[in-house]
Image 1 (tube, rainbow, N blue to C red):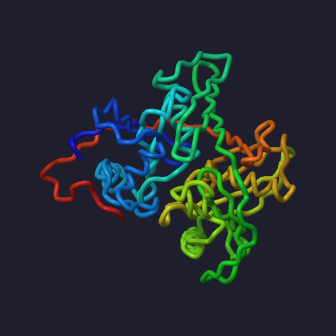
Image 2: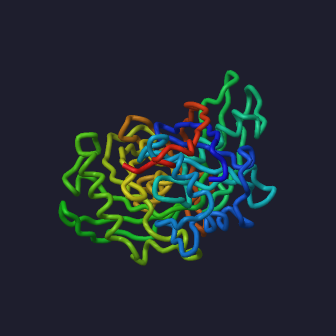
Amino acid sequence: MSSTEVRTTDYHTAGEPFRIVDLAAAGLPPVPGDTVAERRATLLGPGGDGTAPRPGPLDGLRRLLVQEPRGHAGMYGGFVVPPDDDGAHLGVLFWHKDGYSTACGHGTMALGTWAVDTGLVVAPEDGRDVEVRIDVPSGRVTATVHRAGGRTTGVTFRNVPARVTGRRIPVTTGLGPVEVDLAHAGACYASVAARDLGLGVDRTDLPALLAVGREIRAALAGHPATRHPHDPLLSGVYGVILHEELPDTPAGPRQRNVTVFADGQIDRSPCGSGTSTRIALLADEGRLKEGDTLTHDSLVGTVFTGRIAPGGDTPQGLVTTVTGSAHRTGEHLFTLDPYDTLGSGFPL
């Protein structure tokens, strides 16, 4: 770190944290690269593959903010950077305890809310939605911020197209064999019915869900269906979604899930990008069509609703929207004491 202090603004989206650092406002140097995707490659460092970061620029800052005692194993955040061009309001480099991700739906929703809250994108008190366009490593996404009564009441995330890439892929786990479905929506997610492993999506089974999620992710490393057709840095399973059925609503199916991502991190929200892949898989099964709504519950009781965007069936994949809400939890000035023997902290 070139500075001993850094300011952040923290949000949560449906319970999942998102720590925002505006690099320019913090007086930090720009990350080399002409696009957000190139800047992510810079942060990965020489030889980085997207899963095991090398010591690139800003990695000390990432570790300071995500590791204890300033963060925790479930912390998530993003560095605000310039967009790819004038068509977007901002760019973002997403990070977590293990490195830098290609997509983040809950982070996109938090950033849209933050952009309106701070006046970066001007919004009316009432009367209409505000579109915040954001460049992320996997492409351009949109957060439509909903306003009423002088405040933000919700936000809808429009993702890059989602594609089903694998069905009923056999995987052997410590709980027995299971069949896994794969889909890409900015990142690759594996979907597994929890009941096929003898588990429920609840806090009692959380240790087992976490362990088997890590097993499944490791077992699928290098599987052809996890590869992105155009960018190897978008390849590989990012998250494993363990889901269970709940009674349908009048608008469509309802499910509860827990998503295990990176190296054993638990998403407290229903997972934004992961919800896009669930929509694509349900549409592929004929269970969800345009006009229907997927009600997607998290382990902590929060909810996203997901839909196929109008006219969203495109040659590139299924365009989806996911709606939830994000709320500011605090503003922080973190300090790195040069005499602190723990330095930037530790993972636990």
